[in-house]
Image 1 (cartoon, helix red, strand yellow):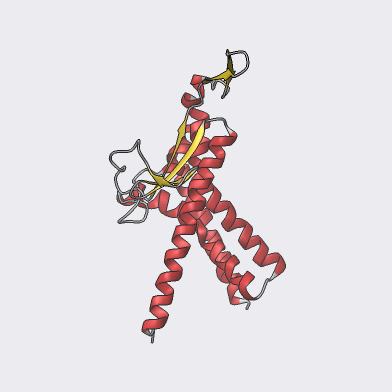
Image 2 (tube, helix red, strand yellow):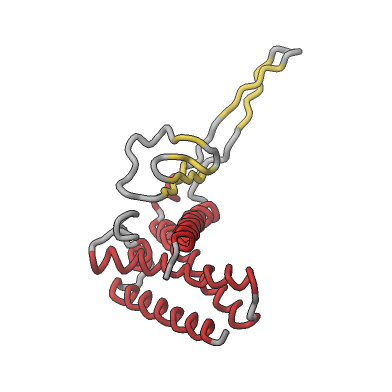
Length: 218
């Protein structure tokens, strides 16, 4: 029987786990975008609070997009100039601050697809690495618990693909967007939607089986 204390602890752990997985998901988008030169990264969480690069309320979002938990956006870098006045000679010195970002980068669909894919792709890679580490190293104690939690992060890829495609639901049924990011990204990169959804289901079921086998040995 689950006591109140155990139930409360379980809810807290689940909430922390969810927050960490969301942050990793958004960082995956962000890092991919920065590497591919999409512009200045901005990460915000519901209901419109910026957490990167600064902390505070967002000024450029009047209406939060639907039931999204977090949003990643990129601000294109443009040429800016600063004017310094030299005190001794009263002369003006113009200095460039940022390099010019080619305007077509944001419309490069392949780059956009990779950035879109690397949200759930990052949580999946962490899940895969944790399973491999559990299999090869058989950690114990806190490290083992962390790896087990990490191994289940493939839920992100599964939810982002299955619920929107088959049930027309949000990523987490009641919250999150309704965009099947991974399916759309893979389609943009040339993989048919039917194949990508089938592949996601097979991969997630396979990882569930391996996790069960690894945990049953202990």
